[in-house]
Image 1: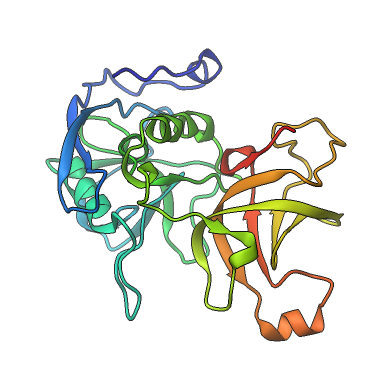
Image 2: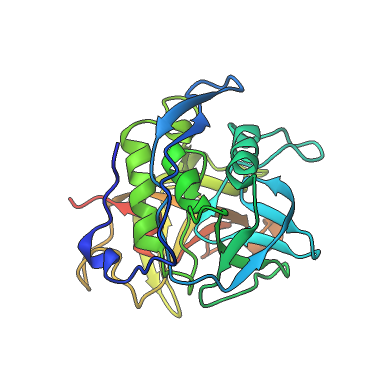
Length: 282
């Protein structure tokens, strides 16, 4: 199977050194059995020369690494299923994503390439990560269906390329995109206790505009959009009645907030770009 970078992207992507194709690597099997199926894929979303060459200490989970110098690295552009913690069980394919990352990064030092923001709110380093062969970990995870593509402002340098990798995995029903593996949450079914990373669907009932553009859905959820982006639509398009699917972190502002601000939805999801939301055209 061959993935082709669109011409508009390839003109912006510069190879650091001649690449060795990853060839056969493991992806999660489409059932929830802890096994891997071999598939062919390319892991080639590349953004120019490495900013740092670093040594890996351990893989924390599919998208988070600990370096030997003590720093924690969070991959840009992907979110993998969460491992079990406390009373929360592991999400589907979380263990497979971690094992995949361990195998992918084995055998040598790592290359880090930075985007615009270099740290997140938790003090972690934000970077595009490549193994010692120069293959993109983010691209490989998305191609295998072991991660969701996320695009958080302002780190959009590889967003279009990474989105195309997720599209391929979804088209071929790999990993989290296999039927019955990852649940889609309906906006009108959100209840107290719901939160964290979700794939959410709903219908736009109302819009509001202040600093952001808010899409109020058919439930206690609003989607926060950047009004400077058109999300693939013409400016001024009527959003009401449109069905959407959005990936992101569902934030519960709490019962007190809801009681004091009855005009606002209790839950919201921020979508910084068109890469994390699908909007019906009719």
